[in-house]
Image 1 (cartoon, rainbow, N blue to C red):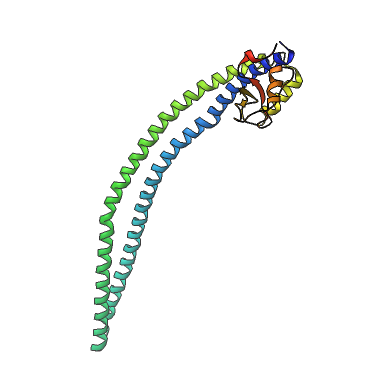
Image 2: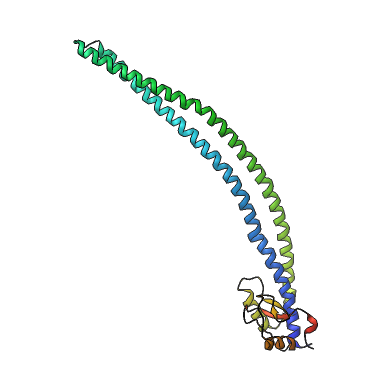
Length: 244
């Protein structure tokens, strides 16, 4: 077997290790954070419903407090007018004051009805808030369990990743520096792969056809061949095709 074929075989072993590392890192860096974020979003949505209902309750209570304060102010005005009523000297002034007092009392009556109507609705809002609060507690408990399970699973993946990383140094052995540099440059592009098999004349990295000339170069095993489309180092899917 030619030296290039030997190099290709060693690169393929390194490639297999790096492919495992890439899959494990992707799982740890993307899958688990995404799953936790999805579950956190569920909790946040439930909490948002509670917050909205709690805000409604607080706003309604503030409205009641404001109306009650207004009612007290109006009642104080009525008391003043009743005192002034005793000081009027003409019948016309008396009639005017009694009219104002009657109108003010009617306004207060409507205000009291409004306050009672809002207060009646407060009980229903409190009940809904309590239900939302229970939903938040349940969602948080479920999230805690799911996160613990995901964290435990992620810990297993980290152990696997450390183990696979430990084998990479051995996989680097006896790979010529020039070939390794070319491999590392391609790997650094971030696709998680620097090599691609050739099936027939199709590059499995980009699913595009390579030239007959490149296929011949690959089978001759005299040099490393890079796909003209995806820049991956090519190797024959069937190792028996490699020329001796």
